[in-house]
Length: 136
Image 1 (cartoon, rainbow, N blue to C red):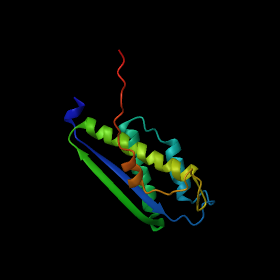
Image 2: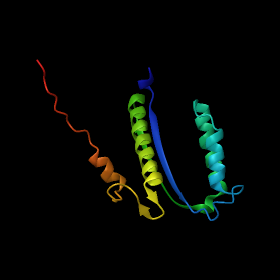
Image 3: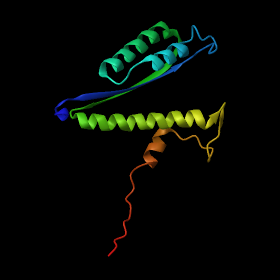
Image 4: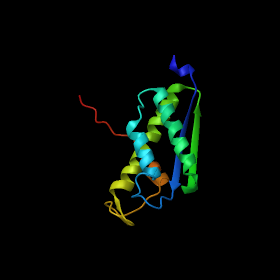
């Protein structure tokens, strides 16, 4: 039974200063892209190996790290941890899509031209009760 296993979810965000993004051979961006492309994340061993290798690369480029943030959540039930992981993954991908596709330079290209902090976006997406019409 998976629910007898506990799980901890970790979300780590780093901000890095990359002086020359075009220097592909020596760029941390190139190294991370290489790791992401060549990693097999279908197994726990593969994910563990990816985390280890990313950590090793980050140590090599530690002078480039400008800031960071880490959030961890512990769950006694595996299913609760899995549900939280999917929630975090969805929010992170949504953030990435907004940053990548809606912004060009310093200009926000989204429909309403508002840059909303993530906390406002999350709170506005609470589940709403739907009215269901009963049919005879």
